Length: 421
Image (cartoon, rainbow, N blue to C red; front, side):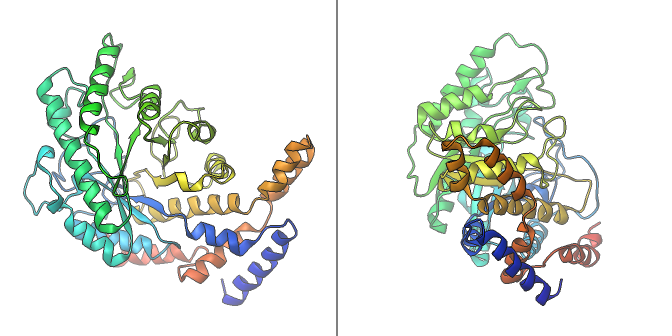
């Protein structure tokens, strides 16, 4: 689009929204203040650098073999830098523990240290972005039983408890160095494929393991722990120890953050409807925005009804400062840089639409029992020129407007990723 077209469309959009009492510039300012935690594992299909040729296990599958995946830390960082150049706003990067800078040496999970992530901290500072962290409980021989923190074998549990301790300390130091709390996400793949008799026993062990490790108090100015639930995984279809009920109870009891992943529930169950309830009982919520297709298949996020509903609930709750947004998907069947950019832009577009909603007016309709008027306004909003506002936001941020980013990604593929053999 030409500069004149962008500006004119934006001016027209401002007039349309002003008629509804909406300050478009203020909405953009709010959008610009919402960082999205971008997941590092889309760039390399969740391989990491502990053992890049190792098998991906724990109910996780990255399907496809599109050429050009990142094979080294340098390549992954270069890809992330390219992604950041194609989207507006200041964002975060979410690291898994297997993405440490191990210098080509094998470092087991119970031996990782801050030194293995210092180069990430330094790199992030140069880019002026913040880091989040994830302990990694999958793709390891000591997870082959299907259990980690809830394994009946105390040696297995001790190994994973030590991993969790080290991850928390690393994340805390990341938070201290970047001057902003590092969100540390705890997800384990524990469960079984078929009918399970010892459900209570495993959950009791998980609670005891978490209690022991989390008893080490760390300043929340540096570290924010969060626990993530799941309904099922590949190979754990019948039973997952860390269910929604388990972690909901654990988070409420311990007054800690809860992670809700869009793909970790029943096919017709949506996390947008859970936000307003959980905000009443936990201090903060961490969202993993994904797109399930019939199961937790981690498809690339697109602008669909649930993403918009999720964004609307975030804004309508009036608690945006208590809700953190991160992406979690890994599609190896398409250009991986493109997968990142489509997902980030879709999330921002959904948030922008929510921010451009006359929430106070809609609430007033509800108070006055004017449900027809509420419905009519919500329908009219669907046709409002919100995309002209997003295009102007991209233009002012100096990133590609409209579909221009597609050409940029194709050029990057020609010049960079296609040469990775």
